[in-house]
Each structure stands twice: as structure tokens, then as C-alpha cells.
Image 1: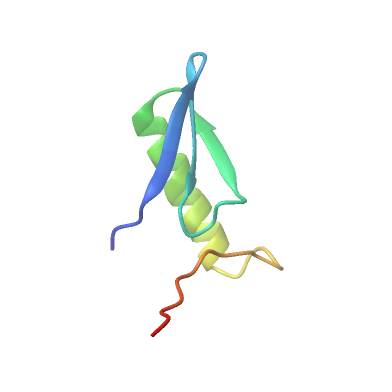
Image 2: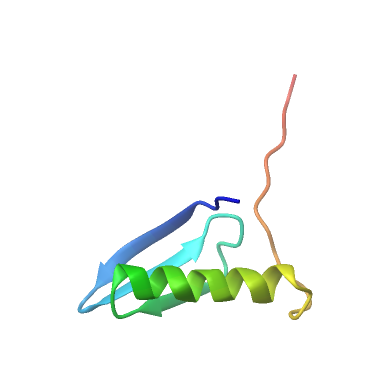
Length: 62
């Protein structure tokens, strides 16, 4: 499984979020550390641990 994420450098840290869950940000000391935190975040968000999760979707219009 592959997930898209958005990230940027903020000072010495890397900050990012999963594109499917844009309201939930995390950070890491390096890009690799951020990716590990994003994996943990995905497990929490997709595992039913958090109620009322807002997601991003796509709608096809004919």
C-alpha cells in the first residue's frame, strides 16, 4: 500500500500530513523520522482509535 503525503521543513524539523487526512499533522527530526510518524498516524486513524475523523475524497462529475 502506498499513501501520498505532503511535507515541508520548519526550522530543523520536518512537518507533514497524509493527503487523505489533511487535518492531522505530525513532525519528525528527519524525513525518515517523519515518515515513521506518518505510518503510526495512519495506523491510529485507520484503526478506529479516533472518532469523528475527517477525510479527503474525490468525486467524479460526468
